[in-house]
Length: 286
Image: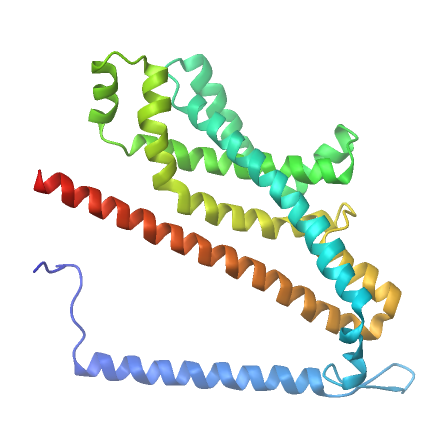
């Protein structure tokens, strides 16, 4: 049995203090939620003295029975807008990340140094600024500008993750490949890269979740994604009285999709971690 010298087991007073603080925090959170619900439910008055129903009034939610609204949100906004952009950008980001990882770990300084400069440049540039730059300088459409910006930015981050994965491998992996007659490039492709990619797969999927959320930035360049459809086009069609309703629907759709992807990332992380544990046990037995 191993013990961690940097961690002291809390005593009775520490545990009691922790329970008290937890209860106080839960009470404060509950009070905040009640206050938020009451504020949203309270009727409002316009500047002219007219009364407006609260956000939870049934007259603000009758639109949820309209099939055209759901087709606009789920088909035009989510499927043909957000997921269409995210899918292509994700594939390109992984490809760009692989290229960056190979360039960053190249033996030649003439390849490694420029790749490092480009990677840091794209990692430090905001995605929205990159979208606007692509749209204005290269005069592309809003879809191409959004996909390009998301692919380049997230590709740079994925490339750095893959480079870290390659660097974390034991040196014996590379030396064994060279010993059996493989070239350095073949060793990288056949032995090192597959292990690094499998090891960094949960991080890559987590970054793709961020990519999906960042598609909402295409709202600024007027790309018809979920946020654009839900918070600009639908209120224009049905009226601003439904703005909070559309906000809640868009929020729920985003939350559902991102939670599903996050769950997938956790499942893959557990499976890859379990595979590493089994392989290490087999190696110890040998």
